[in-house]
Length: 349
Ligand code: PEP
Ligand code: MN
Image (cartoon, rainbow, N blue to C red; front, top):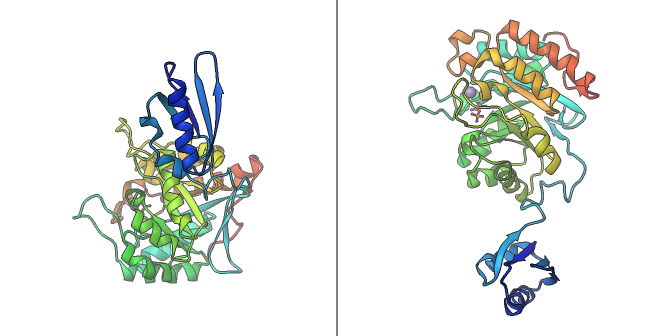
């Protein structure tokens, strides 16, 4: 941490800062320039915060040098992490080596719909199956998901098609039951700042997919991840899903800069959900291609056998034709960029 003194600060002001820092057990190194004095602080940065240094007489500014997040930062963990999803022996990696496809319907609607969507996803090269059972809908009148029944269907279909499953948990009280069925617990955009839920998934013993809040800065997103990590769970995958801007032509604005920017500061893998970013099927494949090109560690898309009949987010769901286009990108682009494709070469289940 660095304290910048105002041009008119007196020696007494400087001595006051030094005395307070030393009283907290820290060290203060004073550097006098021609017009300004700066003071470098070494020690417990969290403790220095309690000093409210900015309010002291003669202090112009205070800068942090280290990241406010610790466990998810690359400052203390330079190597980028791979998170492995699913039971031992059939784990699907998400990390720097591969680009993994996660696909499935927005919501689990029925066993037939789920099975069909899963088979489509699997033949497109998906490693993981998605499907919402507890749905965080904007409207309380919209389909809220099948709940426990949805979890059962999702887990059965994942088992039958050989894909670990990811589903959202919206309430801290449901974390236990969702963790019984899901291999990867999703915390949705609307809940990114729900610290009680973040702590609960941090203790659930399952990897976590943490979506970025629609108006969260990268630092706020990483601080949310720190809540999960601080409860002992470092198996966290971050998911960029678009942020709210002035543009209304699509649901959200996909912030692709976030992918390399977060990868530079955090060791956690970063995947992209172009479906919830765009809210429009025609943009999903182009944005998925761009996500792979920018270095995303995975792509998550909505798939539905009959998008026009979907109970949730039909307009953004890929049908068979669009999914085949995506499959081609997922097969070809990662190798062209020196990465292994996350799409295993499999025939339809
Ligand atoms: C979802 O993935 O089903 C979802 C609701 O996404 P988001 O939280 O990004 O809106
Ligand atoms: Mn959705």
